Amino acid sequence: MGSQEKTRFERLARDNSPAIANYLRRRLYPLNSSDLDDLVEEVLIIVWRRIDNVPADAETAWIIGVARNVLQNARRKKNRATAFETALRPVMTESSAEDAVVADAAITEALMLLGPEEREILMLHFWDGLSSAQIAHILGTTENAAAVRLSRSLAQFRQHLLVDERP
Image (cartoon, rainbow, N blue to C red; front, top):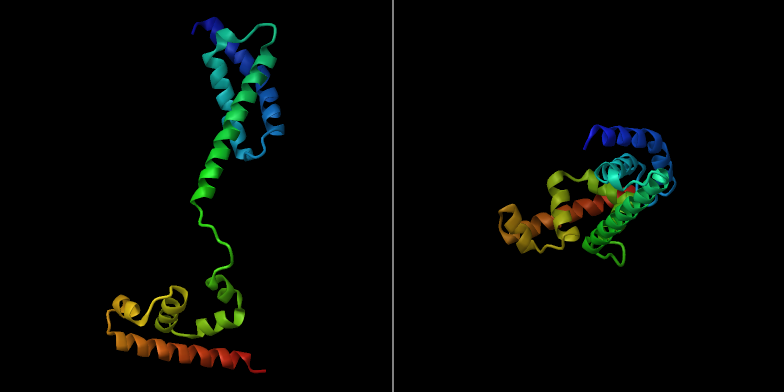
């Protein structure tokens, strides 16, 4: 690129950057405002690469056309990313049991009154749906010991819950 092209580009960038930014800002949705500078930069890169294609009698219009295409490409990219992320999310048809239990403050308070080991064994059984045998494997103990610990933890939990419910 010669000095004439460089000088022309600098003039185009200086004179048209506000128009490019305003055009994109008004049409930015669903993109974020943080994307604006990147989009203006991308438009100017295209103008730099195609400086010989910019018509002398319609410079601003041509550059706004480039901005329009850059914006459409950015929207398509955003839509593809959103569709991909949506496809990866698990479909929840109803609230999970954990959501319902945690939403109940009395249950949460009763759980917090338990020791960490008791709380963990209850969560392994009720939240994660593990059997006494599976819990025994996780804790490195016998199935009978895990069942006893689960029973005792549940009894403590019920006791805390009943204390909280009394007037």
